Length: 403
Image (cartoon, rainbow, N blue to C red; front, side):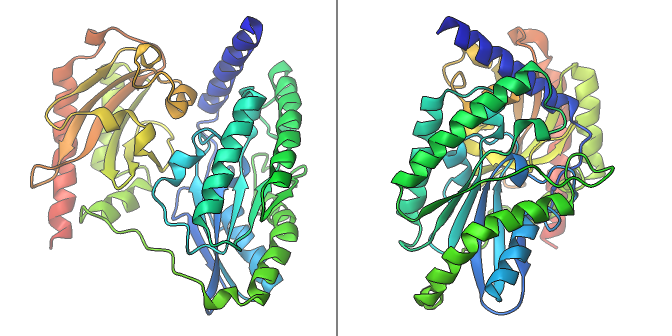
């Protein structure tokens, strides 16, 4: 038991290093929704990480989200819209948090693509079993009763370019165990099917992924999901279909801020986070927007997800009237068992609130480090100065949004 714990710890550190080394790899950061075809569309939710994340391409239309919409539309001879929820740092344990309060009743099918990071981090099989069963039970309870769920298997670990050596070999053994477990779970769950993902089709000079890669995987998923959608439509499901609610923003400037975030933030926010990282001597500096059940990254000094569940973030605990300092998340009961914080390997955090024109807290300016630090390791007055500068930029956008 002790040895397995040590092995998992080493594997998690190896995974965190691979993520850090891959900071220059492009990935999709645009609107995670793709519509193909005209007329009433069947709606599909794509939930996951790894192959679903869009490594190697610059838009979700080129990634699995768009290619799955294209493949399913061709199969069903009708319009299909695919929404993607997830990020590389999503795990089976945190998948429910990523779903958050999303209304699932309007979806005609769900496709999950999970497990690569669970495999290489050596997630225990019993933990995977518990998480996947819980996820499928939640989906089944909130989808229409006849909406199918397709669960993708984990692709061969060695086909991911950065994953080589003994850790990748251990990861492949764990992936085989997790795939066997998933097949058993799917067999126990009504309205659920398993789809294996084979070796990716890589284009010359595109080792991390390309349109060809995602098209091939989309066709594999469509081979399973397509007939299930056909069956549902033959039963008249299109007459019962509900609409998926659109995002409604509480803060008027949110769309403008997040449009800029797709390009790593407004020029002023990019300047602030890059300067703060250097002056504060941290691994990462970010400005965030807190909206709904998500923490959105408005700007960051390094690659980050577009958004993460607020329930998994440090920011959930930042007070509206002052800073939050976390010297070591591993020793803090609020964060010790947080799956996202554990995976991101940034145990030191300090964050200061950002307020809108009315004085309501709408975001934070944060600094994080890959090593625990003392409480006084970062000067609070310096962080506050950056936060107030970011607040002025947020308020400028708010004034523009108000006309």
